[in-house]
Image (cartoon, rainbow, N blue to C red):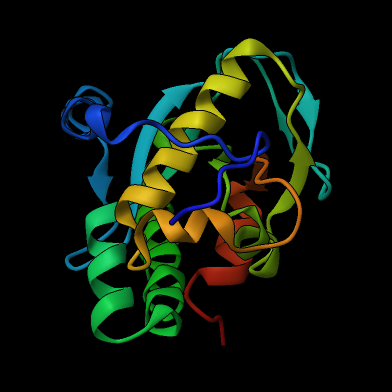
Amino acid sequence: MLRRSPSRPAAPRLLDPILTAWECYDRRRRRIRPARAGSVVGLELRRHRGPDFALGDGATVRRGDLVGELHVDNAHARALATETGWLDGLRIGRGDLAAIARWAARQPASGRPVAYHAAGLLWPLAARVGFSVHRRRRTAWVRLDEWYARWLLGHWSAAGRARLARGRGRLRSADAWISGAGLGQRFGEPSD
């Protein structure tokens, strides 16, 4: 039986079909496209709506700038974790980031994201590959987003809802950012 903790609320199973349908609808609405064939990372292009801020490498993200929003393909990630293990998913994810860097290098400057952003529970993986990670302000929207992310984790994890009982501390989401130049340096084509 799954232990419930106030820090890790899970959506009732009754909501599974509704939230699954919402996930499919939301991916289409946002026009999230796979980084490449067989990818676990998808890309959404959007305009930055928040305040201006500087990234660690000196790049500035301004209101209205084109930003690449990174999303995990949950169904594919689950299949990989079940069939070949999560390390294979990490390898594919790094290849997906390289594919995005190659795609961005082919775009005209006006069509190239100035930065890439990911928000969610998998921020330790983003930090491991070079993203700068920042805590999210605890707003009602962030709490709802974390509730949904915990549902995703329990729904798509190979361990199912039991996954929510594992780990250290509270499952909190974070924002992860990397500049377009930073993504290109880390994952782009090597230069001779």
